[in-house]
Length: 372
Image (tube, rainbow, N blue to C red; front, top):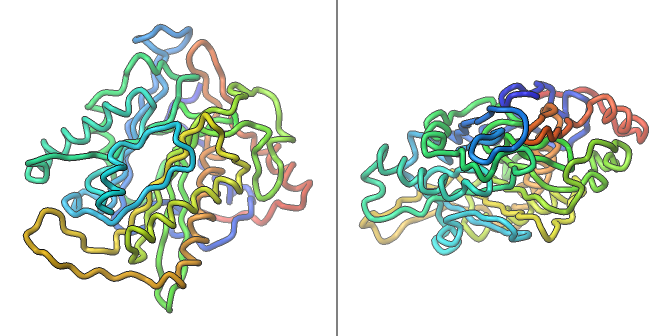
């Protein structure tokens, strides 16, 4: 067994997996200025499942679009659902208003309501002036019941507070941390993954980052760098059925309007497809995109605002960045991970680096070792 924060430091680029595009400093969503991420990881107990007692392999992830300092300022945002067997609370108001307010939290399926309610409580206790009337917080979920005592309801408001309070910019721990602790991706140990891209538009440099809670796919579908890796690395499958989900959060500093952000959110689907996904009937594939570029004000008396946005004809490098960063984030959610044993002795194996490299080398797809 491996505890949630004990993940291998090597990422896919460090193995020589070839990815296109220029990354930011940390190759993470936090490369977008002011974006902060925090975790609360719950890892305790061994042996057979005893509902309410464990074993527990779960947690909460918090993403703050403008960090703690900017929690009072909304961002333009939009969502897209590729397949709707999942939940993202508050998404109706995001779609209606074109704005996202407060932290985003990610957790397991049966704790999504707790995460939503606790985020509202966090806002009331930490920033009461922001929630005098109401708040529709955004919380997402994926299912971790193969490894976790999901019906034990172990996630509490304290865990949500911890994830939000500890959210910070900079380098990220990935893999089995926070909401991704008990997740499975293509029947390997999955969870949290992130990646970023930098690009120029009209001579100005911009950044885009993607964060995923990856819990989807069956082994035979897995593609890495265009190679059918899942067909070559077999054995130890736990799920072996078309269920599971993915929540993806896209952040950028490109000035965009909500309808343009929806176009970005749709492109997450193409990044998933590069890893082999067909978006199964039993999968909740739900995406949200936001921009930190605009100065959006909520609840003021001012009636008219001005917003910058790029021309639609200049969106292609932004679309490319979404697809590339999504693909890499999903692959990294497995590569950085370690084998985990959970409820009833169920063991989900990590993607073996040696076999991955051997398979890519066979197809002449193993490149030079890169970083980050």
